[in-house]
Length: 271
Image 1: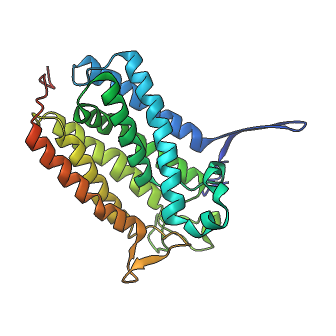
Image 2 (image 1 turned 120 degrees about the vertical axis):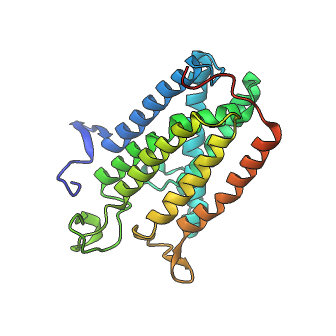
Image 3 (image 1 turned 45 degrees about the horizontal axis):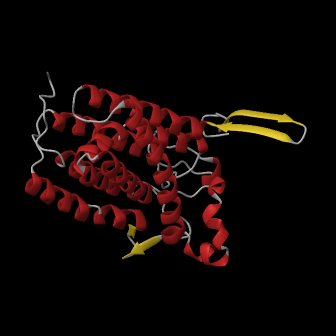
């Protein structure tokens, strides 16, 4: 059970040796991709994304594959390398958990590059669309983390502190919900607001990288560090914070490239 008494398993059915299990976490991810697919369709209808429905479906499938591979590989190499050395096959044990969002971004960027080449659409056109459509899904993912009772925050005495079964007897910050609000709601609102203001592709993608890095960096001060990593810089900053700070580098590069290429958005967002 999670802190609210919700079973992480939406469905758990036994029939002899057969065991069917559907977790809320999976449902949240699926919901995120359904919402993302819908928003991609809306962006296509408004001429922001020049892809057909078939192409968008292919893109979403590639995003899912890229996300899983990128998230798992990055987690194993950065957050759990000793275990990987001890058992290289642990790389494929996705069901045991262990995914890195920064790695997921890398995987989705590669998927975007592949689709941009296949359909001859500029990379920034698709990557901006991915940022707009995919960011709301971060909220659902963090709700899934909360239901699982994982990625909880540091011990606190605030009135909304939560006692997590795996976090000991003391109340902790529900930091995954902080992330869900800041990354999934606030950042989404910022990006969709920018859509009404920018004239060229690339700026929204740069804003996503910088915005996510900023919000996640702040929330990491409330989140319990990964037990196998702890604090890795000055006994104060976590691995996640270092990766978030490094996100400013590609954000700046994307911004500069967007300024250089100036691929004009071919429509008025409010029309």
